[in-house]
Length: 247
Ligand SMILES: *[C@@H]1O[C@H](CO)[C@@H](O)[C@H](O)[C@H]1NC(C)=O
Ligand SMILES: *[C@@H]1O[C@H](CO)[C@@H](O)[C@H](O)[C@H]1NC(C)=O
Image 1 (cartoon, protein in one colour):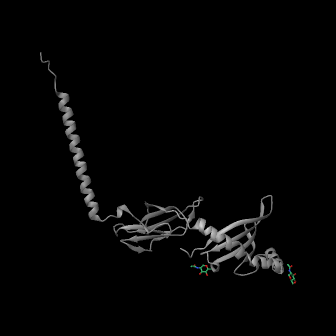
Image 2 (cartoon, protein in one colour; image 1 turned 120 degrees about the vertical axis):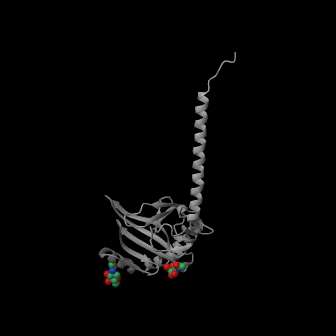
Image 3 (cartoon, protein in one colour; image 1 turned 120 degrees about the horizontal axis):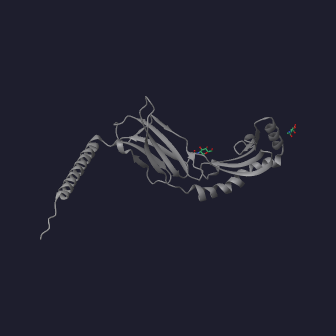
């Protein structure tokens, strides 16, 4: 989980906007721990959505990506005072913000909830189950399928983790399987959970369980039919009775 790169971005400077063109710079701290070695400071300049140039603490100078970006990068690199200032940004900017973000935001977590459902299979395909995992934070998560407690990887397709737009995330995983091959479960691993959260697909119950339920259900239906028959019989009888005056 720690291996995923967490990124904090701040839109710093808006150089100019006119008639829908947007030029902007972004300061970014990418980190997988609060350890300074695990933090990379990146400053990028964009025109509309195109990144023109970038300073990265791991490179130590500006790098341009097109004609204009290359010229601008060279111009910045020529300015030793500015370059020195940028090389210090990782310690100044990330060193202060990363521990704050980590302690105030990333140490918080919210448990996911899981919905298992069957998906109508495409013609010529196996039965498919969908495991939808909602409302978890942070986004680092592992969704795994198990049959009879054993992890399966064939027939599994999982989406990227999708931000729900409200700090929560969701992810969806499908499993193509052969019905009757055993108990199928979707197992979720997440920072918020003390132990992995396993959800069992109900119709993957063993055959003996199913027949017990079938016998019980037949008994219940038979009972209802008999009760109904008795009630109808009683109603017919009582309607047929004639009240005779006693005097
Ligand atoms: C964290 O990031 C650093 C720098 O990018 C990398 O060298 C290191 O292997 C990463 N650690 C983990 C646990 O992924
Ligand atoms: C950068 O410095 C070099 C050497 O002084 C110079 O030739 C070059 O024109 C400078 N580049 C820019 C974009 O200022």
